[in-house]
Amino acid sequence: MAKEVVVSTLSVLHQVDNDNDISTSLQTKLKEQTYTTGSKIGQKVITPIVAIAFMLFVLLYFPCIATILTIRKELGTK
Image 1 (cartoon, rainbow, N blue to C red):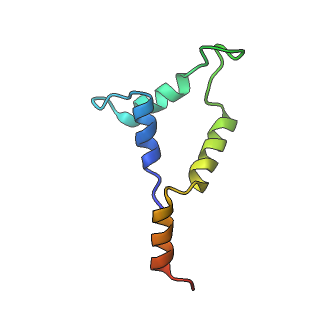
Image 2 (cartoon, one colour):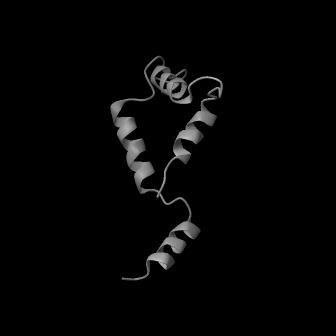
């Protein structure tokens, strides 16, 4: 199953301009993002542990039940 929707969703959430190279702009914004409130003010939001947890979530989540049922129907019960 394709997970390209994750990149577009992150681009929208981080307000990446379409005029610039989207991957570079998004990558830069994610690397530079820091906490602005709470006890972690100034610390980076995206750490290696956060990145691994996010990748596992994206790998395991179901996009929607209709998609899963369609895949099951097309593949059969073999």
